[in-house]
Image (tube, rainbow, N blue to C red; front, side, top):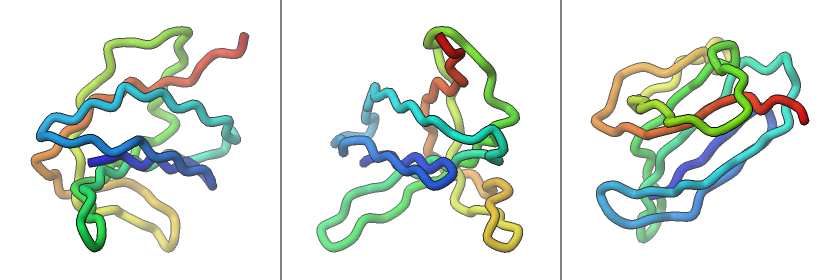
Amino acid sequence: TYVVLKVQNLKSTTIDRRGSEPCWEQDFMFEICADGKGFIIELWKKGLVWDSILGVLWIPLATVEHATDEGPGCWWTLHSEVIKNGSEIQGTKTPTSHEILLDVYFALPF
């Protein structure tokens, strides 16, 4: 499995890991505009022919707090559906059995 993070026009992907409880411990830092609505996290399972999505999560930027250092993180339930208003993502719905532990924060400038 691997994770894809998308925020505004940026995208990053973790390396893929095997097992039923994969651990990436991978840091991502994005420099984004303050007017962004949120970001999407997708959990994918690698396949022989094509990959399949296991779950998706929308996190509004308005809910992300500022911090100076990493924290313990929070468990988030992934969903199977994306809610859109036109082409704009508004959220996710229909929980799956998959969860992901994330530590999400705005880094304060030095």
